[in-house]
Image 1: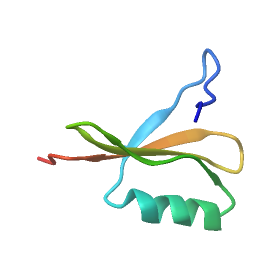
Image 2: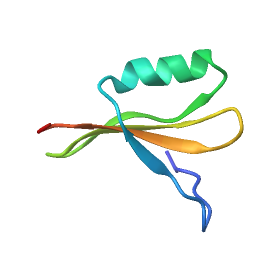
Image 3: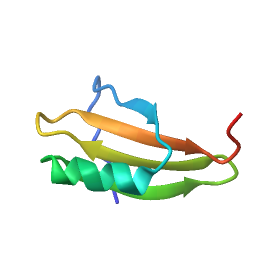
Length: 66
């Protein structure tokens, strides 16, 4: 799945205790999932959504929270 991120577009990462629940809530509020929850080997998980105005925001959960 190719991610759409044109040159100059900023994607911020936000800590999420439950990426799946956050993506589900995003869709309920009119956003859409751009990239479903996926593992980053030995680091954690991420997912990306787009809000109704077109901003892309990434969610991140660490495998080793401190």
